Length: 280
Image 1 (cartoon, helix red, strand yellow):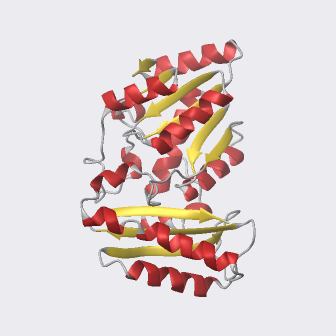
Image 2 (cartoon, rainbow, N blue to C red; image 1 turned 90 degrees about the vertical axis):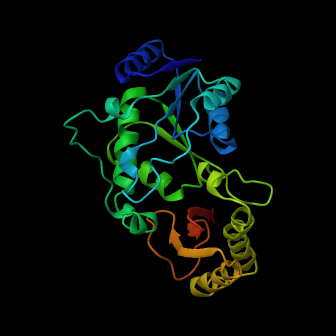
């Protein structure tokens, strides 16, 4: 596996692989890799001739009061994991390379980014769509892989690719969980002691939803009420939002729509903000 630090060099490598008619799979990450990320790399390895992975902690998607400076980073560890999974190239650009002095061009998906995470973090998705569009331009993939844990991000990026005729297949991969159900996340590193034990409340609330829907409940207000009861049983948990939305357009639902429902939530456990979801 080669590590590429320069965007122009990465662009040239992508061009050459395109000329050689190689199918390029791409996994963009912010590093501090866990099994969720690695499942994406494995799928990309199965599907494509060549696998590019990027690691870039993107300052544009962090608000001033968020955790950009303390976001976990460990390039050596990530490098070893990616070598083991058979990645061909790791793109590891600097902030200065991605956003040179005078940078003033942004990509924004409008309606889909105003709800859920966008309501709580109003500048977040402009940073996500801008950096992913840049990474797509640099790596020129045929297929790109994202986890369903960041459900809104996946839906927004599919819309961006469709609207801008990027010609890239966006592949959403299942959430990978710890044994107790906690969705894997680089931010789980922040959880200490009893915080880690109580973080399972997100999954417990979603499992309650799954039981209710399987039993025929389709009233969203009743489902959200039961989810709140579950989370309120964990004293360290503070709910940011619980929401039930159409997968197709993220509009809020009053009744469960089979095959088109996303149940998602964001909860703070101490100082750590966690998100999780289930797709129905």
